[in-house]
Image 1 (cartoon, helix red, strand yellow):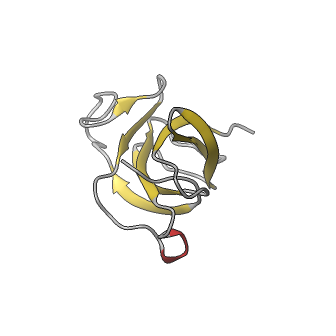
Image 2 (tube, rainbow, N blue to C red):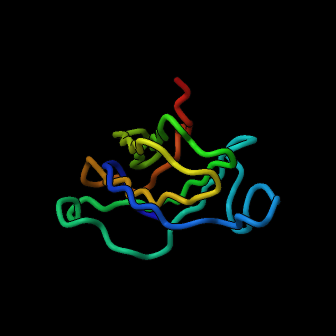
Image 3 (cartoon, rainbow, N blue to C red):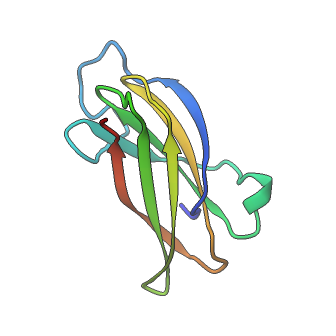
Length: 121
């Protein structure tokens, strides 16, 4: 999905709370405790409509008590041309966060997640 670099975060609800399957159905494993999936459709927030955005859902098996941090690299013609970050103060266990990563450069054609991690203080 096209999209990129900013920060609009909305909790999207519990994901398979009763299930012990990891990662949850439809999600890709990022690590032993973090999973993600790309959002389909949706529009970019007004401030970033000109450059585009990506939507990604992130869920943490044990939650992210001290915060969630996501980075995405923006690419154009095979070269990294920018990056974006999204942060969330906390994330309950097995609850999906819907993050909008807004492009910070016009012409970014693709994006790749570079990092997803829970803060641990």
